[in-house]
Length: 172
Image (cartoon, rainbow, N blue to C red; front, top):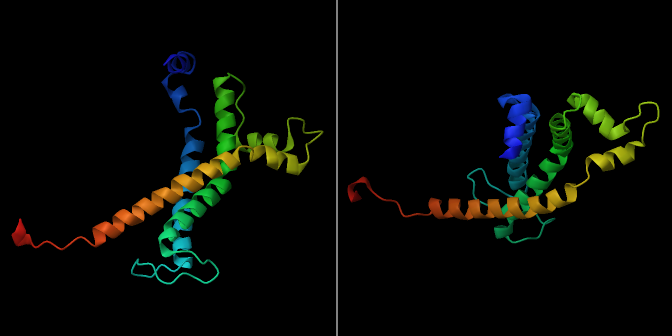
């Protein structure tokens, strides 16, 4: 609460929304990519147009009950890996705003993260890419478990609901 009071005192109530636009873009793109990937992976692994699981391709010999876990895990990790640089830029912009430093736009922030603060003496590109992806391993590990379990649970509940006995209106 003391941080909230300090932000409101220095930047007003809109200071609480610093980085909102980048957060919105990150979440919108990341979520769209995530669901697109999950659905695509499910179809690649044998989902039928009816929604039921068909035969699994021979190049991935797993039990059909593991398909939601594999697809959820892969969609979570890959979508997060693609959107991760935007999250790093958003976080850096928010940190600078909270520290009272001069505002830098997303493009300038990204360039400085990749090439370093000295435009005359840029860092090697691979070092910059490594910097912008620092911490992805922990996020990927979290994504594998949470998204895999989420889709496994979702699939189990959907299967349960789909196979409930039909009730007639006269039973009510």
